[in-house]
Image 1 (cartoon, rainbow, N blue to C red):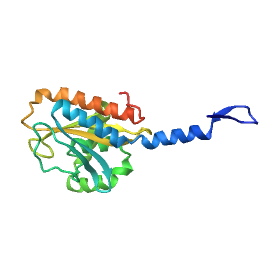
Image 2: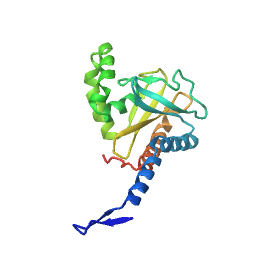
Image 3: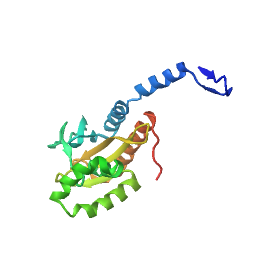
Length: 198
């Protein structure tokens, strides 16, 4: 497992240990861990949730977890969410590198030139609290809470978002947010990442 350098007499990782490490990293699929964590969140809270990833078109929904009762909305697998008006978008604005979102952000700012002022506030609030909340700004009557999930390199990998409507009293939103944060922290740490300290 370890090998000794004949010149320095120091020990290092041997080929077998390196292969074991690489195999473990290959199985550390942050998306499957996130799916497991959000499935459990939905079962416990009844909240509808989804996972999104950053793709060529922007923040794209790639997994849907119907709650009980389910939230009926125009959102579906493949939907692309705005950066400035969705909780999911706020997380991407706050944790991706500026050059990664530049093209999409430029498109949105063309239709909303004043958005650059709110963007600074969005980033500050989201990075400080490690979550974003939006109520009715993107879809009337829909409340959303979005929380990041980080990979082993500390980069934003997936965003988990819980959505609710009038069927869920707002009094339960704090408890749902705490449960979603716990799920995202679990997914981050199980995938080998480190949950940020604020």
